[in-house]
Amino acid sequence: MLALETKNLRKLFGDHLAVRGLTLQVQQGEVFGFLGPNGAGKTTSIKMMLGLVAPTSGNATLLGEPLGDRQARAKIGFLPEHFRFHDWLTAHEFLTLHGQLYRMPSSRLRDRIAKLLELVGLTPFRNKQLRTFSKGMLQRIGLAQALLNDPALVFLDEPTSGLDPVGRRLVRDIIRDLKSKGTTVFLNSHLLSEIEITCDRVAFIKHGEVIRTAELKTLVEGETGVTIRAGGLTGEAVAGLGQWGCNVRADGDHIHLTITSESALPAIARYLVEQNAEVYSITPQKSSLEDLFIQIVGTDGGL
Amino acid sequence: MDLHSIFVIARLTFKEAARRRILLAALLLGISFLILYGIGVHYIYTEALPQDGGPTTTIVTRQALNFLLMSGLYAINFLTLAMGALISADTLAGEINSGTIQAIVTKPIRRREVVIGKWLGFTGLIGLYLTLMVGGVMGIIYFRTGYAAPNIPNGVAIIYLETILVMTITLACSSTLSTLATGGVVFGLYGLAFIGGFVEQIGAALRNETAVNIGILSSLIMPSEALLRRASYEMTPPITQTLGFGGGPLMVVSVPSPLMVTYGALYLALMLAFALRQFGRRDL
Image (cartoon, rainbow over all chains, first blue to last red; front, side, top):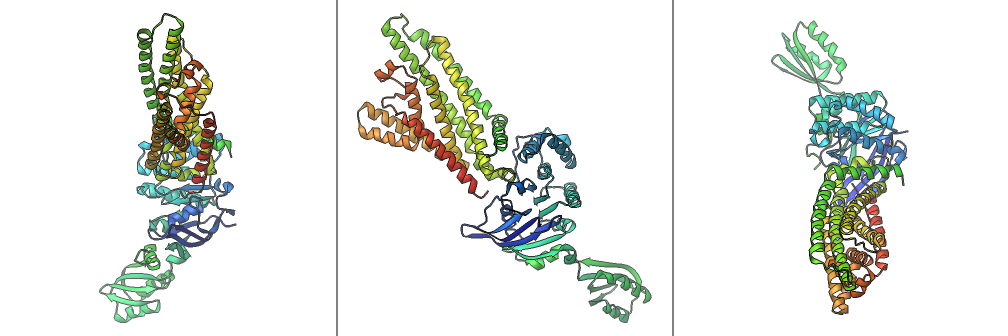
């Protein structure tokens, strides 16, 4: 069974096409990144998957059940983007309310709330009203809310917005922890570094369509630029580097080349030593997800 | 329908009214009104009304006391309507606008359970407030003067219907319109019923049929004032009714038919159904 499957989900708001036709599959236990420029229809897509917005056409299943199924919703967690909660509730009351909406038995709910408050570091603030919380604290309590029911599938829409580096690391740790427990995570984030660290697979969307889905490992592997800083190399020795890659350029002590796989690096190091070069550094420059993003989505930002 | 979810939302609605101090503000206003009212009743009763016990004076006194009672109920009715409209205008529109609703309706709860829960919460709040205030006004009159209106359960039930009707209309608007537009529509409807009601009464007093029909039409568009008049009429002693002085400040000359109560109840059911349908299918 797939955790999530959408087939040609489409949404028209009046005559504005927000999502053209979203087709994707998310395996169970996967951390899935949802990437795309602003206005690409990411939030509308998530809202359709969660039954907040009715699709104009197309269909989808969540945990094997059709959209809007209540049994499926009991196993889902959701942290909305720019969320606001009833800010006149205290942190504890807020989590109690949402646990009751999940129909959790009160003894289990009590344990779970204590555990989650501890996890997100808000135990000292449990009896404070949410209106007194900072943006980061609200994000943390929102995250706790999304995990109350030990969900099988969690949607996190911009979970790190408003968080400081400590909070961001917390989110990363939580995602890693969820993954180790076999929970499926659907992550929408603008922070590519976030996605790069946490996700197994990513989908790039533009104009409300998936334009590419790929495993992150294969995506960021492949061609790698290497910068070598070494002295005492002859012109022939530099040219000899061509056997591992292409675009060999020398610039004083610095030599640049592009290799097809990281596995060539030890051989290059050995070769340089054999050529009696004084090697100061060999630095592979992985093409980052950001480069890929721009390459795939284009610099127009999808506008 | 799942009672557990409805109950959770209804309780949340109560808590919100308490936490946001709406209930406190309404109670403080109500109590200030009752104090002023009590002082007024005391002085009118001891200084302005004849008390020689003769049959004519008894009728006059009872008529005056009924007028005072109806005036008190009129004021309380207004306070209750205002509280009901204020708490329900923002409830759906505001939560949709802020996104608060998103984390709620993605839980295993049906959207209609959210609406029913809120509606029940408001119905309970209004009932509680109305009971306290009506009890206050009637208590002041009874303990100071010994006067009790006839048909109190009927009359108060109609006032309760009227106040929850206005709240339900507000909730229905709030499921579709913004908070501000909701306020505008409900205030406009209330004004229409208010003016229409007086046109009808003046028309009836001057025997002008067109004016009466305009009034009836406005009562069909917004039955609040007609229901209040019916309630006043129910709680007016028969002799005062015959003299045409029922209804206190509402001057009930043209008496709304008891069918108006059925119409009001149907209107309410229709508005609630509209709210359920609109909220059930809109994008959030």
